Image 1 (cartoon, helix red, strand yellow):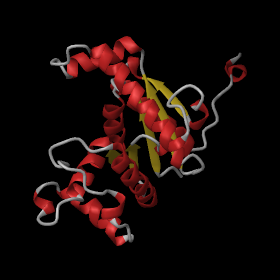
Image 2 (cartoon, helix red, strand yellow):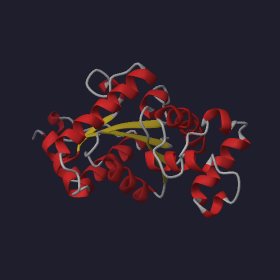
Image 3 (cartoon, one colour):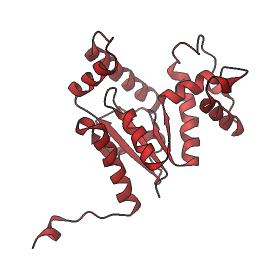
Image 4 (tube, one colour):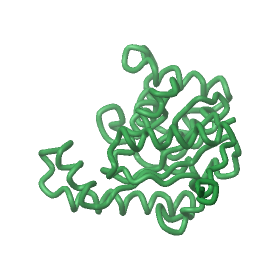
Length: 219
């Protein structure tokens, strides 16, 4: 029984949108980079965190109830609320949150490294969403029209992602680690189609589906 889906994706591949569509179809929740950063920011606030982000505040309480010291896991980085959250804090939080979400079940996790942390879990479906560079650049240009050089931006994001994966998991982001995934989806077929493929794969796994061979189609 699959209770968690991880979705690893390139910048501009549409993986975050795919994750949300898959979760919506299943009635599951999403844990992604955006939520991680919000939790990191809320963890620094001492009062009235609910008025800033109720969902992130609930996650902070979940971690505290598990004995996680947020001051140690996510030390203050100023200015956190309005500025960027550093990768070290994100990584420490991500590890705790991925494990908690896996315990709860019914989560689509679109957080870097989840496929590595959960590689030996039989109740997890690991998915890679990728796309040709031209498609990724076009998507970034469409989403961020103010970006002067979308292609350079995509290259920089790829470099940062590779660095993060190497430092924290001693793993390349793509290529040599394809064995980590149960399904690889090229999102150039469309975001809706990509989400449908993942849901179809989940259904096959859940039903222990055995694909029909070509011989069985023969007259």
